[in-house]
Length: 316
Image (cartoon, rainbow, N blue to C red; front, side):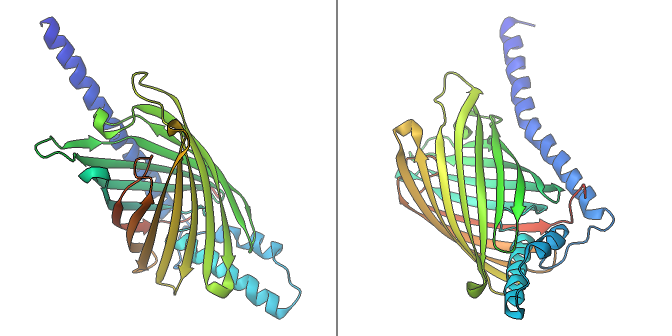
């Protein structure tokens, strides 16, 4: 074997391992979720993905009057519905999701993404989630080649450390692995994004308000590529219209520390429908308000997908 042939074979072997790693991780997570779906006592209900917490919630609720009790129960139903829909960022909900995402970027460039998410409730209070996507990057110049392949892998873990009828709190972190099959499709950096989320039910509005804050920093990776460092702040209003329908409005502010704190703002609206206690579908259009050059910015976006909720936690 010549020297050039050896270099080529090593490069091909590296590319193959990069492509296979996220696939095998997804299969492992899917298998774990499947075990959760068939475990004894793990039957999902239409509006309850957090039933292990019911006793705890009931103990924390005030019992001063019949009216107060009705308000408490209404808030609990909202929390259970949002958890069952997979829309509450503080809920420990198990599901499989696949969605398609179109992002129109500055100057005519666009990306098409097929995203798979596996969310596992390890315990009633502990979450483990994996997100991977296959991306098509379409440049803004005619005649330029279209890059496609696996993008970076994201693993999330977190703990819901408090829940009452009035408030739920979640802390955790995302870890980004540079598994992209091409430099065009990823950042080339290991990143960690600690953050937290809060959920407040508003029974008078049949809604929940969510707040999410997260800050990403680079912790390693390709030294020849720029570091990734930015913060995200999100405020959402999730309205539960019935046992089948929901809507959600999101405002997301991104602050790019690598560009001296330059900001970008996007807004989106989601409508979702639950076919049964397992299957759901949703549609989410979005628009960039300003700052399309910052991380996660876009001119406009369309997301559509399906979600399959599975059962209770792996460890009770």
